[in-house]
Structures are given as structure tokens and as C-alpha cells.
Image (cartoon, rainbow, N blue to C red):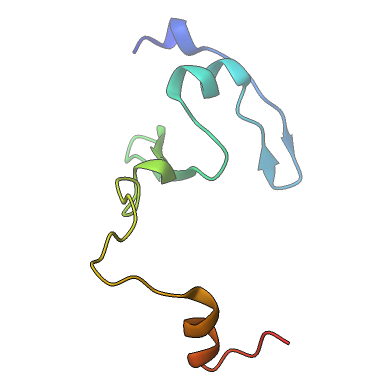
Length: 83
């Protein structure tokens, strides 16, 4: 990725800085994603994007067990008072 393609600026306000929309779109950064900051030995700042939608449960389609349940009966049986 060339720096020409992603040059952009944002202003720091308090302890926060905005990521310009063009960079968010190009790198597919979305709400809930995390940024991991690294300062290299030469002083260069490197930012790694940790996308939450590619986490542990991103491919989880739910439990398709053989046993059916009745949510009302089972919920109450687990000791949760819904009244």
C-alpha cells in the first residue's frame, strides 16, 4: 500500500483522533474494531486493525442440537425469576 494512496490528516481532540472516512473505507474499519498501536525502534508508528467480525464467533451459526427445549419452562427451571 503506497503512502500516496492513503495520505490523510485528522485532528486530535482530547485523547481521541478520528480516522478519516477514506481510510476507514479502504481498510474496512468498522464500529467495534480495535486498533493496536506499535512504536517501532526507529520511531515509526504502526497501527494494526483487529476486526471484531473475524473473531472467535464470526463463523458460529448457532447450536443445532438434537434436543429441543421449551424456553419458558427451561428458563424458569434454571432459577431465573421473570415476574
